[in-house]
Image: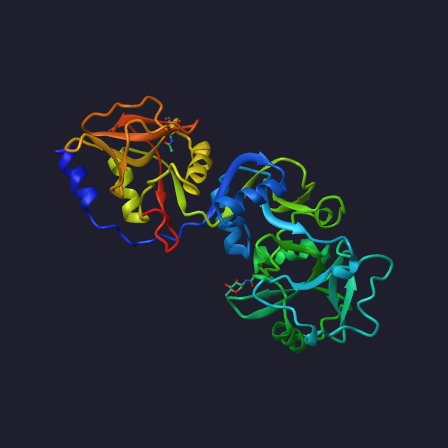
Length: 372
Ligand SMILES: *[C@@H]1O[C@H](CO)[C@@H](O)[C@H](O)[C@H]1NC(C)=O
Ligand SMILES: *[C@@H]1O[C@H](CO)[C@@H](O)[C@H](O)[C@H]1NC(C)=O
């Protein structure tokens, strides 16, 4: 009965329904930032970029409580002249031609000023980000309107956090600013808007201006040139030589942290992704599988390797033959009808009975899969 089910499963078409799984992979083995970058570039695509609030929430889901992990953001320069202006809302691009600076602004008056207020005349003035202003302007995307808040003193970052929690973001771009001009006068001479400058950039050279700092101090210390995600999901700057777990983007394997029998795992992968993972003895999947297995919460992790009675031999789910004496077996030469294979934390393969329940690794449906 089980053999029949198994056979029909193995012969069935690959299902093509791709769920919107994040393509972030957490690597729990701590490394300095540049080693983490090298690892991601070699075995995935790059260290993770986080481009907006949606990415941020996906990232938090993937992290699942793991804290203090590197992402792909790093400071490219200490030079004030290398700072670039950005809008807080990442969909809005800063254009020099649109700038509405007041006379002699921006001026870095008495030290670096990296955040911006709008004044009574709708001109911009650079300010120190940690200064407190009562007034700030949020934009609410769902009502397509600006809201001018005027209550207690807030730093630029506190204003940004308020706007992101209650609306969409700090007011960003001239289209939104036009609305501010209509709502005037608002009685305050200076209100934070979503304009800031920094020298942070993404490892994958994504132009995204999205930042999710959790404190003012994170933006400033000169020695801390790499960004990590902290406990509350907010980002902090950190010394790049410190060893931390990290997040890569672009892998095409998914660890499913549910305990299922081998058959259930096969069905799950084919319904939600492409298949149980195969060819795990070659790169880049070899390393990706090791990274995933370390994060699993079961001792063993199912992979798409099964023993076919008829041929008395092991096969990957894609039909490729695996010799009994393959070096990755813990004990070579064994195999019985209905046996399937799992991977141990140390990377060795073991043969098991398919009704045991373990975590498993699927291959995503995508155009970038190797070795099929
Ligand atoms: C933002 O706009 C939506 C849709 O109009 C509305 O439901 C929501 O209350 C607004 N938020 C605030 C804080 O005004
Ligand atoms: C899966 O099984 C392991 C024991 O092998 C257990 O520690 C873990 O909590 C289980 N995970 C889930 C999601 O049930």
